[in-house]
Length: 469
Image (tube, rainbow, N blue to C red; front, side):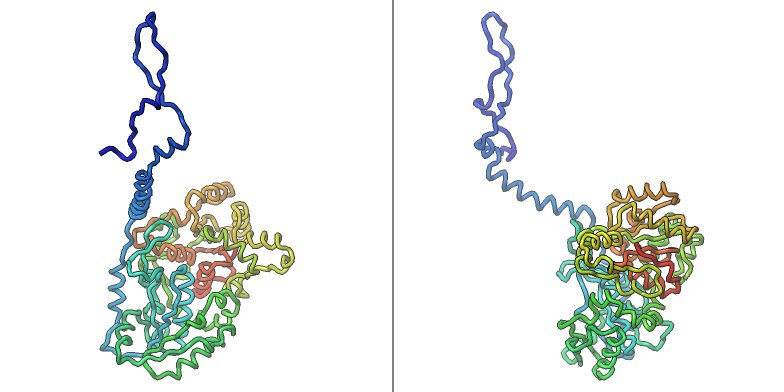
């Protein structure tokens, strides 16, 4: 069969080069393709069959391009670890369980993390067992989903990202408090036809009140329940929504939250900690113990970590200016030295946008200047770690500029060596490094930066060591 893209010789499409005469010896005839741009020739070449073949091959090529980037891991070993947690035993005394079926999914890890910490704190304050969920990107039945033309796990067990009370870990500071269980065990206990389940709606909750008022209201609702299985119906309103986390109302629960096991016993997962330790040569700790000890308050001396958010923030930052947004609530803590004041630019749209971009989407020159000023306050800083979703080649200009400005080294998220399982929890690895840095410079509008600041302050690191772009 002739190839769909083969060419057929047609004499009328060629012309002879040079005529022969009796006085001139014959020579080989040469042909030259006659150039024609007529629509008839175009149609002749691109027949319907050829177009259909080309269109059919496009999804095939896309499929192979996606699959060739690797099949994500299933984390079966970590799921087995969760399954064997001691509280996942029907022979043990069963406490009351609190589940939030309307929890966030399909959002970034830090949106999910801040919500999970608050929900587990509420369960702790009520003395019930928190039901933790997978970090879920998709509810499709397939184990993977597609993101940025690559496969990613649809669900990741929470213990691949964090350890501690929110993920079912022990609470040494509160040994009698019921430990959290995963959703699978909860379904086993409370999913039967004879299970006694009590549902509380968020409809009448004081959603716009300060954090301590909200927590007290929910505690009052929960302590009056006798059934063993409690679920929160948040279809009317999220229990802790993005407006709550983006508002200083959250600071009213700061003291009690930071003293609770949710933060005092918080730790990154062994998978995350192993990645940090694996990259010790890039991070250059004074002592290996600074990396191995998850609860060590000692920082990575000489290292400043900078959160340089790119990607979707190119659209998000101008929207923040349009909305008149402030820093995340935690990032407005009164002990933090850097403030965001938009009041001088309220009536000047262009000046307001410029002010927001300076702090939300700074240029290379602005980042270099900011780091230079921070180094004047902390003369021991020598190395820079950049947490970023930027492409590696896009950070070359920043690296060159910092070297010219006297910094010894710049390492970024793209330099960290990760295995296939660690690749999909890389955001947590970035945060674990930033948490240990001597100084952290965050993006005040980012939930990642907010969570890093929260964890650093809860661990007892100086508030002044947390700065913003």
